Image (tube, rainbow, N blue to C red; front, side, top):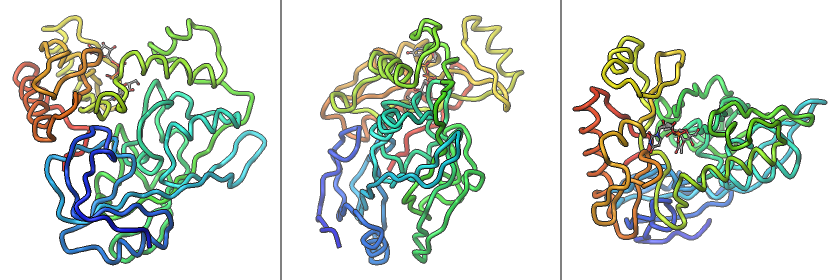
Length: 334
Ligand code: EPU
């Protein structure tokens, strides 16, 4: 069994870098150890941690935090066109993207530099620059916390939506994802470069998967703060989807409002709404809104979780008052 730490400061394990104590902390490197730590969980509860890139701790936790540190990448099967790989939950997401590029396997190059671990990727259905995890996901291996049974959930079972999945709903706090399978394409590749800012960065020329990943990395480095330098969790809110009627009335009032049609209605960039309200670059103590991307809340050093949360609530209220749109959090608050 991996060693159990008492009264452990979680700051270094979350990308917000905010201090909070967990009464117990254990990093597990095998399924046996994971099951043992689930089985012996204290009454005060359990929290499962991957790369800590989508969580805001606003208070200490009296229970046990299990850091899923399972490692490994293997080829499961292949055809002439594609390869299925299985990746253990504790692998770093961006390292996996680099591995796929080295191995000439296409599919996740647009998702370069997303912080976090592989096991959390299906929970959020991570997405960027025109690609979502659901485009390449085959299945997830999970362990049920209640009886420690192991099961496979197919991509359909995972009910993936925009930054949403079964793991945020019916299975919330019920399972631990231990491994994820992806279907990736062998050469010749046809990278997806249609997303506006990516196309601009590539200057419209066809590129190979390595060049696409490099372009995504350049865009992200320009716009998004590096969590190793400034604590953050990427987009704090989801982009809201409104009905066509609601969008038309907003557009009458705000003719420059950007929008993207989606099957459920019209998606509006939350960053634009927040930016218009003058929040971009705002700083309250060590809590702030990033100067290059209004959707990203940042910890300049010593902000508490409660301070970041208060700023998020203030923004949410201001957006609601002005636009009658309730922003949903992308980040999970604890
Ligand atoms: N905009 C502003 N002000 C800003 C930033 C953006 O007005 O400060 C407007 C611009 O009109 C811009 C539009 O918002 O064209 C969209 O901005 P951007 O392309 O930066 O994307 P986003 O909608 O803010 C989403 C994802 C990101 C992902 C990018 C690129 C969500 C919640 N966020 O951001 O994902 O990297 O698209 O695909 O869907 C994340 O989830 O943590 C994340 C970073």
